Length: 172
Image (cartoon, rainbow, N blue to C red; front, side, top):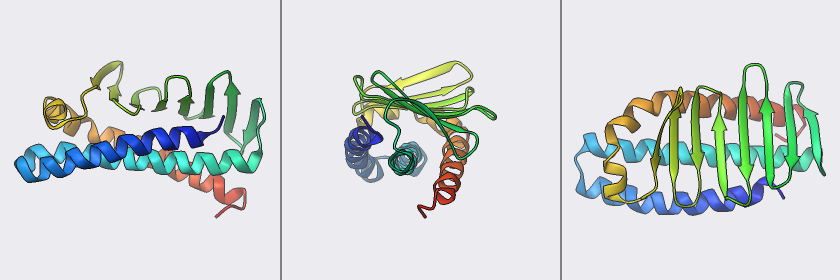
């Protein structure tokens, strides 16, 4: 098991979201279509994070169990779950293979992705977009725009720290 399965799953979500986003840009006012751009950008960033985590995993060659990488990060494989975690400050990327689910969180803010749904969370309050369609996403436009900056901060921070980790391993 590796992050490659997650990359394939999230690529499928991104393809579906790309089509819905194009439709939104054509049919909805700019104010409403902003939420579609936010989701597309978040899923794209999650995919970049997964690609970086996959490269780190290949480099450290974790068979099973856990291994410390780049000082504060821990790469863990347990059952059908693969995670890379930083404890202080808390940052977690988890791929659950049986469910095809990717979770990115810092304990306060969370982004959970699968081929057919997107879950956004802030301080224990979650919204689940299980209908990746114009109507399904339009229902949550205001919430998506409100949570966007927190989710971008989360994904940007994790992407930056994992990229530094990869550089320290001599991969970039």
